[in-house]
Image (cartoon, rainbow, N blue to C red):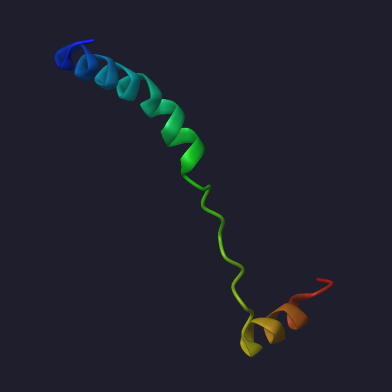
Amino acid sequence: MREDEVDQLLKGLLKHSEPYRQQNQIAPEKPTARRKTQRDRELMECFRNR
């Protein structure tokens, strides 16, 4: 294969693999669990069973 054919082949493969790579390599964003403050705990206690 000539160099220009190899370049064309590589460009084609990269172009067609891009959607697959994007969907499988990016880790899904998970919201991190926020620690409740003392005030949050007190408010939850006040409004429980209402």
